[in-house]
Image 1 (cartoon, rainbow, N blue to C red):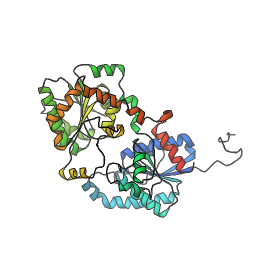
Image 2: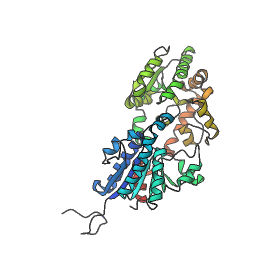
Image 3: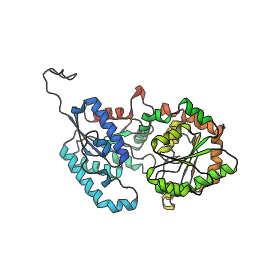
Image 4: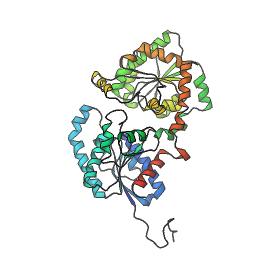
Length: 399
């Protein structure tokens, strides 16, 4: 005879499994979703929870049978979205119907706000008493701040990846918001150098990382000026080993583009080799994005560049933050130089990079600033982001 569940009277029936509806819109949400599912199961037991909704392969591995493949809705860019729009609209309505049919105790939407928030708004109208948790806050602190107040109408709780986001939602009249931690803080062992790797970081010639982005448009705008910056450094007599981590779908385009460069970078593929390069690098030239936070947590000083189209450039007039670099926003200071649009000319990139390859005040200032990231980002009591997120979801569901 099995022992009763702690807190359950002997002979009492076990509680009904918690019903959790989950909706994601792309691969990054699937990664957060499967870890959240695993953390909820760790608290309730595999038989204590039932999942339904929309997810990817990782969430399927944890027991979610997705309503449809993520490829139906995981599209980026104006033209691809327009081409797929009728399908996406049908998927929104089908998802709403499926969520309501499952009669969940809580709905968790993860990132991809164009899709997941469209679902949440319609669910709220038809089932106003169902708690809705939004995992990953839209960037209301950067642009379109009015979204925060609108979200409060259909979202009960936001799970934030960045430590400054709860204050932003309070200031903007958004939903309740809790910092649960960025997934990168679960990977510090992969980002931090060993003693041997730290010795390579200090050795000559230094490793210089090139990270021109993971989208074809970013590569098209940044790869050439990045290469020209390396040539200028070499012309000035600066010695270095250039390493370029590439994503698989852009490998051939990158290899073709760098074939004629005077300074040939060593191209590495895959996340394992990318992080190995991070642990040995002395400095980096990077496109703005999550990679800047990876570099900062690895302790690699950097210069950040970004270029957008003339049309997109007009958005700068509605951006509400003093920096587009994530570590700068978390630290509350512009510790990392960012060179945008015309300012990202090769000569300026080279001039900013040079001091970071030697023992300079500019390099030391960044290293010192990065040491403050841990105290701002790491959760107390050794919790992981997924564990913290699971706890908030269960409270929202009344468990």
